Length: 238
Image 1 (cartoon, rainbow, N blue to C red):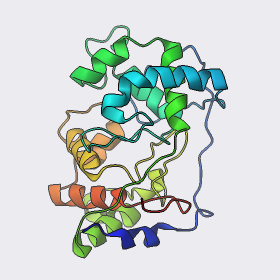
Image 2 (image 1 turned 90 degrees about the vertical axis):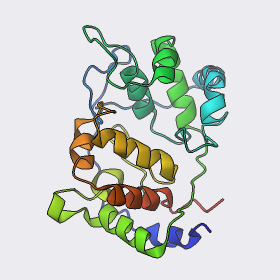
Image 3 (image 1 turned 135 degrees about the vertical axis):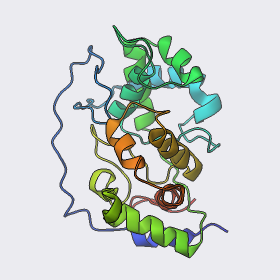
């Protein structure tokens, strides 16, 4: 049975969370560095951009859902994700000038991203960022969730693993232009990505590789489960 009571523990006070300022990013210049941090911020989309983004998203619907809420844990939920993070990942799926391969390798996404124009990338990123996110729930026993909560809030000191909350926030909402939203994401997807970071199968974030490389399978599974149950105070279990 899903542990729905987990949600109650996540309505933490955000007042003490220090948000870092975001620098601007030239709209026509894709990022060149393979990093989880992208110093950029998207302006509010126009209705024309949202319509154009919805059109691009039709191609993505089979995996990510028409509104960005994927129905399978094999694919990430994109609804409510930060637009610039989505754009960065799409750029990372493409082969940058002078590179031999994409910063992020995925046979399906490499092909999809290669067909998109810069405008389409911005449009679909903005579209997904404005869709209503449907958070998941944590499926784990109390002991596993307690371990996941400890890692999220305090890290793993004896392995020099920092607390997830320091970058992704108490509710897992991330920081616009800096860190992705992972609260309420599929547990299976989060666990897989952490494993890929650890094993150098996903290489577009040196920071996450460094962190995941010091975590055990049990720790990865626990924090992924905990993150799946996180939600913003305004969100309820669906």
